[in-house]
Length: 117
Ligand SMILES: N=c1c2ncn([C@@H]3O[C@H](COP(=O)(O)OP(=O)(O)OP(=O)(O)O)[C@@H](O)[C@H]3O)c2ncn1[C@@H]1O[C@H](COP(=O)(O)O)[C@@H](O)[C@H]1O
Image (cartoon, rainbow, N blue to C red; front, side):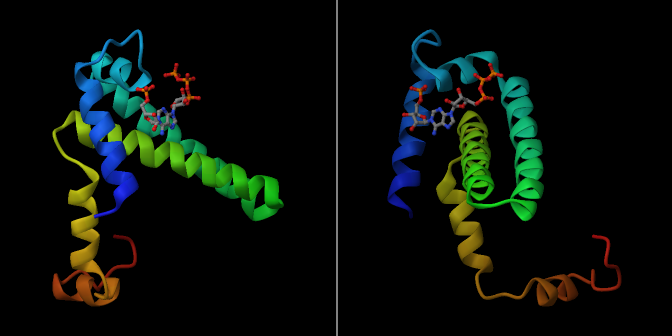
């Protein structure tokens, strides 16, 4: 669906058979799902901290936030690849949701009573 994401997905899939000594992605696949999830968690925390800094800071902090989001997206893509999924599946999910109000969707599944979930 998105050319860059598709190219990156292809690289991530190819790295599953690569030597961990030669490739960061191969080293993550080699270490396994728990290591990959640890990285996703770390990167998510870094995004939160960077967003706080960006809200209070200037262009440097905003650029740093973009870099942290890229790290998070990348590690989520490695996680999907490790589980035989790819970004196309996520983009298709977003495409199906596009234009459907989150409030309307929540009401349709009977979840409109609470603000917490
Ligand atoms: N987009 C990325 C990308 N974004 C971030 N990173 C790496 O992700 C790591 C995360 O940052 P950290 O500060 O947590 O790294 P770290 O401290 O070395 O990690 P740990 O030792 O704590 O696990 C860094 O080493 C980054 O270089 C990426 N590594 C690879 N890619 C893409 O994946 C492709 C394949 O990479 P290789 O498999 O390394 O060839 C590359 O060509 C790129 O397109």
